[in-house]
Amino acid sequence: MNTVNLVLTWVCSLGGLAAFGYRLPDLLRRKHDVALWALCVYFLCSGISFLVDLDALRVHISDLFGLPNITSLIVQVAVVVLTAAQQVVLVYWSSPPEEARLRARLRVLFFGAALCVLVVASLAVSPVASAKTATSTILLSIQDGRYALYMSFYLVICGIGQFETVRLSLRFTKMANRQWLKVGMRTVTVGASLILVYCVTRSIQIAGTRLHFDASALDPVQWSCGTIGALLQITGWTIPSWGIHLTRAAGWLRSYRSYLRLRPLWWALYQASPDIALDPPRSWARDLVPPRDPHYSLYRRVIEIRDGQLMLRTSLSLADFSRVARSLDLPEDPTSPLGEALQVRAVLNRPAEERDEQADAADIPARPPYDDFRDEVEWLTRVASSFTALTQGRAVRAADRIPS
Image (cartoon, rainbow, N blue to C red; front, top):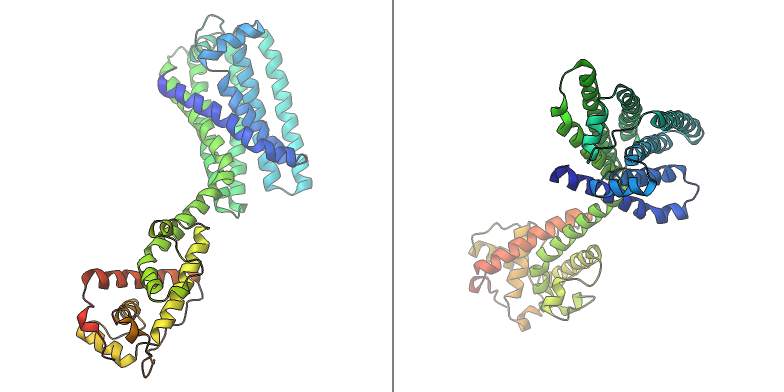
């Protein structure tokens, strides 16, 4: 077993067992959820099938049971069980309850009967006992006609199960109404397709022993497809559980980024009118990391900016605004992002005592707030960008001083 396959085997083993442990608390709370039971069986058998096949453990397990290469049978039994478990999950997810029970029962009976035949057949034929690795065990064992027939039967069971997994996954993907559930089912479909490739390549190797051609060169292909396919299936079945957390994390990051981008505008308004802040910042550094949910902090920041803008608008008339805009060779549109930023900059550049005096006519047209909060955030972000550009460029300085 090369290093890459060894790493993949450990990842699949630990991934399956970790997924089982993650869903176990849910299983204890939802003891009558058949689909969840089947999903947990899938995770457990998947982890076991890779764990017992590790070269570092397989010899010790064989010694424990007193049967050479018993791990080959354990792996095959686990694979048949997890294949049946997948069918039960997909049937319960994609069919009405009464119909799902019947379909699941038929699949369990089919794979149960196949498993019994497989176990009985293993008593008559067994893999070569002298092989040192799992890979060489199979390659040497299929040279024997009886074991080749046994492996062919095992591959047929796996092939039927994975074909059904592809079919049911594609069907359920069309029915699923959640983004991460669709992603998970597509991942399961790709994994099942790769395992089908494993079944085909292993079958070609078996045929090669009967038809006298060497197909050992396909061993890296079948091993990689089988391992990567199983890893994709484990990942696909877990995506609906943890994918939603990625969506929430991405939402938090977007809100936090907007929170920071609005800070220069908010800070200028806060310094001019401290009353706008519901929770005044204790320090500049602590304000960079909001103590509450980023969504709530962003919501408060938007409200406080709008309040600050409304308070400052009373200190600026339309004529004053137009005069400042013309002096800077800027558009005279007070309802644009640049216009709103220029209003704030112009008022803040006045002395505090003059700022408190209301203009004779606060007649600047105001832009109504957006109904969609995301649109409002996007607009104010553009205002904040314009405000920062005006401040850093120092274009609005002495020229925008409005005579009182």
